[in-house]
Image (cartoon, rainbow, N blue to C red):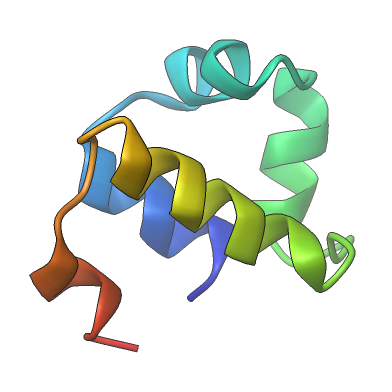
Length: 64
């Protein structure tokens, strides 16, 4: 799952999603427009955190 897909599932704006993970909005924007790619472990870790915090559910996780 991409970072953009994760953010979309949460319904958060870019600024709120970036604040949630304490990353610069510009970094998130670069990941979403694919001008930069996060390390492969980051989207997986974000997904686990979002699932643990109840921001996304099991059904969203399996849509990959």
